[in-house]
Structures are given as structure tokens and as C-alpha cells.
Image (cartoon, rainbow, N blue to C red; front, side):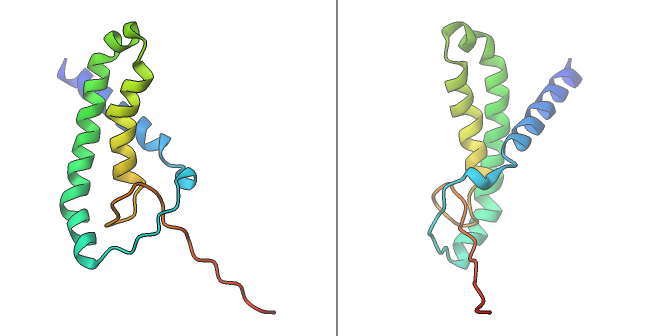
Length: 110
């Protein structure tokens, strides 16, 4: 029983990671976080958000039959899985808003 739950959670986590591999759709963030903000984010916030994503995935799986009957399975998935996963994986280190920092492209005069 425990092995089956573990496999289900790992499959859900893998699916979430693959779903968020395309970060090109993220909105640009114009923040310049400090070194202290980046360190705090890396050491404390990201592990907590990862745990929230994993726990939210488990809660979503358990509540899926009930939310499907209620007609809000998509909304439950958005709140319990997608929101925490975006905050974990699609956010620059130390930033407070979810999104991707724009890459700087320099043009050379030829």
C-alpha cells in the first residue's frame, strides 16, 4: 500500500516537473534581489515551497474524486499543485513575484 502511494506521488511530481519545464511562458520580472534575499530564498523558502508542492499534490490526489464530482477539479489542481509549483520553479532566486527574469541580449555593431 505504501509503495503504491509512493509511486503515485513520484509520478505526480514528475508530471508537474515536466509540465513546468517550459518556462518561456512566464512573465518577465524586473526585480534585483540582494544577496541576503537570494540566500534566504535558496535555504529556506524554496525547500518549504517544494514541500508545499508535494503535500498539495498528495491532497489533490486524495480529493480528486470529490472535486471531480463537484466540478472543480481544475481549480483544485491550480490552487494545490500549479500555484506552489510555479512559485517553486518559475521564480528568480530572491524575487518576490513569480516569473522569469528577462535575458539581456546585446547587439554588436558590424
